[in-house]
Image (cartoon, rainbow, N blue to C red; front, side, top):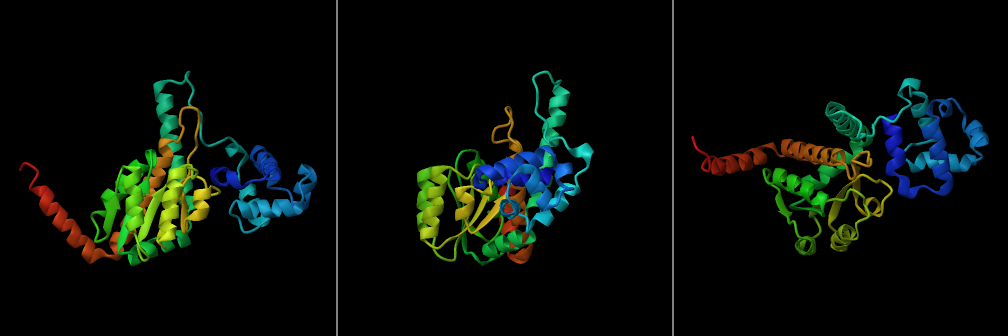
Length: 281
């Protein structure tokens, strides 16, 4: 059920009052809902067929039949939320197991959420770009730094700063044909959205990474890659989201590096030669 749960949560900002009512019913009764025709679901929830059909498309399915298939494939034994709240009464080992489980589930859900088309388009933008900026604020800045560090090992000319004003300056110097990878967990940060605005004013292609597909940020970027994570009282902007984002970016780096194998190998050798001189034998 993890894919359905997180599709609904990722598109939460786009949902109307009727959508949220429908989502609540589906999440509470996924097995039952999976056995219903769209007319039966409409009668039971008092929500119109048109609204149900739009809801299915709004959260990323092609039709209600696709949504129904997903619901019908859920085992009754899996009807509980995959992510488990960590309680103060849990033992340290139980907390460890729950935390690792949430991180693993996040990676699996993110992998299921990303389409081949999104990855291919993202890699295409990177391959055609001469320069790439890695931008993000707060916890997202740490993710941007890791991605920047990875792409320094490729022939790509990469830019990064931890300071918002410097990031604005980097964005202002980008031009058409360049690319930017911008990370925003919530997709609602005003300063991050301002960075995207600056980039779009200069016709720079933007790959955005966020946990909320229905966010203003996701709507603005050229390609939105969705990282899935569950936030609980102990896991606000959870590490699982960060791990998913890093894994997405590492995948882009790996694919880009393989596509530009010869030049990447040259860059790696140059870097290793310099680093070797800083280490003791």
